[in-house]
Length: 121
Length: 113
Image (cartoon, rainbow over all chains, first blue to last red; front, side):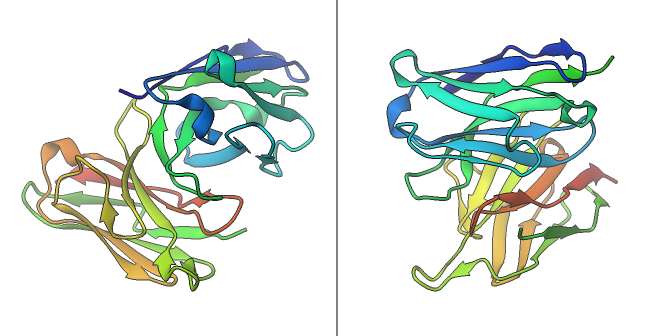
């Protein structure tokens, strides 16, 4: 079974940094593009970032561009999100999500349970 | 960015009755090269991550009950639950994967009447 397990969330002050991780099992991680999607408390879903299967291509939402960096380690079956210069509005549950196929733009067919990031002084 | 707008924001349906959720995109999500609508539907139950129900606007994912169906083309889409069950209480989101950024509708909450 596909399993995605996020970790690394927590409380951080505005301007601070946090690194999220997502451990993948149950599938050949190195052949799938991956994403981070977030959900502010009581709100809807917002795609945050994408990385291709080998890590050669990355994309970001305008709201996080220049502050967040997505990366992956296929040898460790892990996905990461380095978040710098955090703002109150970055407060959300962050999900890692797998692309459904190998097309350039796909829906997300597997999701982790999420990790909560709270940005507050 | 493509803006996805769902209606209604919430609806209350009796057990066994039909639920209909609409989704409108600000531009067409029909790719002429493959003649497919790049539109997905997700279900999110309280305290859980979203679950992909439907892709290509009308293709159910494996394991999704056939009471869920998707329809529409271009800019207007519908998710129908033909006979609502208690376990279908959730928030439903449409999403376009026509271009980046992949955007979601604001969600529609389905409750029991």
